[in-house]
Image 1 (cartoon, rainbow, N blue to C red):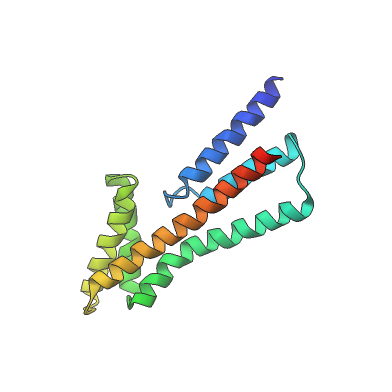
Image 2: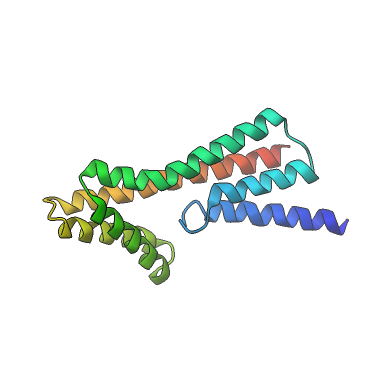
Length: 155
């Protein structure tokens, strides 16, 4: 009885971390949601192996895309290596100053400053590209985490 309650509590904790991690880059949201999925699979009710492997694959792809999208949108908007570096630095600093909004604001300001240092003509365009990449990655992670939550509660 107590073991079951602990397992359910862990599943809920990992699902919550998965959803929170959709918006805070330092918390790997989908992998945490997948841990909840695995706990449910091994201790409560089994999913098919096909679904297990499919969800694992999607988690890997979305996790990779999350890290790649911001860099992609900075490059697409015309930013270089310095802009990418400043974007990452801005995101980290923003995370500590204003936890959720600071990430967006920090990456925006960091990419803007990086683009200015690289003497790019339209640094605001690059800064918005960074925010779009962050938002797109966050939406992907959130949708996947909610899908995993739905799979668990439907089962």
